[in-house]
Length: 199
Length: 334
Ligand SMILES: [Zn+2]
Image 1 (cartoon, rainbow over the protein chains, first blue to last red):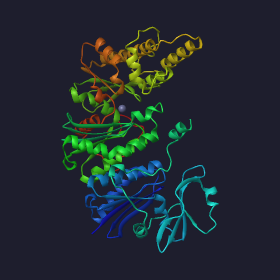
Image 2: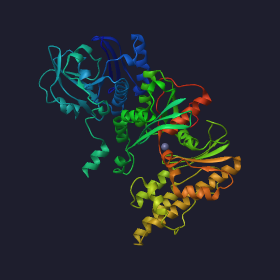
Image 3: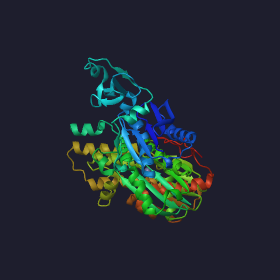
Image 4: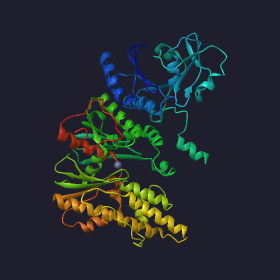
């Protein structure tokens, strides 16, 4: 029996899912109020109790590593990193934008996470035979400008509960070799580093 | 009782294991100081990114050093605040995962209580005592009548003393962090300039350092305008004498008023050699304790020990709703 935990906290929503033998047995997808840090462990505890599982029984953790809210994504990645480290189990990462996209059934999906002032972390994915793949690289863009390049029909999507089956069947999961190396995908260096490099 | 301590409130990722609130089995500190140096101060977003990079490595090293397994721990103590919120959240969540993974109780600790309890590692507290807490973020006088009871007598009305050190250092063109550099140069200088001693005779136990800081900065500016040569060592010495005069005078005032048996100096500025010397010279009737250097700056051993005493006093744990908090009063959560 394989037991997987999926975590994503890079958006306004917190997503936790327990998957046993490729079937989602318990999950939570709920909007937070800048409080993923408070809720993640109580929610995870509740989920494990409902499924009658303990963290030590898990075989794998899959974690959304962004791009998205810097503080938000760090919560989920910290938790995933610690579970992987403590129990010495496999950890795989996935794009938080791909997780959002998996909620859609359209052929072309453009998931985004708001980054203020009209900007967004955004990308475009394609779905063929239920297989998700990237059409463009993830980037931080002015959303309005960015969308002008597409001349086909697409669904623009900011939220949606991830589709576990699609995610597990995709080629988008990446193995974290050394758990100590796991970190979020911020897409951008910090403002302080940009200013320093600019000088 | 084995207590795991976790500290990530600023730019040090630290994990420690202590036994019975006394014996330090391990105390691993991963410092980011070399990274922030290039920016002249701690950059919060960079600090958070560094914490998450190093966190599991630091846990692993601390457990290996202590030669203990997670399941054998009795309590987890984690800094819940005050500090940089993004940094605090990483330590708090990492600690909560261990708590959930092994069903070990967890307790949130105030960072300043950690600094105070750093003294208790090497010397036993005798009550009542006065704690002078001096760091980049704090300047406070605290009265303790018993374990884990804190009565704030006074605090800075503006800049923390460490903050004033850093700003003066920057104006003098000295590298970050300024405190240790100013301290080192002060030893080579004489008190050539008369700087003010703000609030030294005030009726309370409060402090103020922004006026002194401005005075120092203005004098430096005016001298440069007049093309006078600024003698940096003497400048540092004069500034340090002014600061330590105030800190020592207020501590003596609190000591006499509350008839305490002991004084402990806590926080990063407790490493200042000028302060150490003046305290020991001017206070000779009761012991004055300074933690050794490794326990002055931020470290998890002090959090672990404070957590032990907090639990002894309150006999209760926190639940999984425990969160980091950038601003936190020393008496909150009691
Ligand atoms: Zn500190």
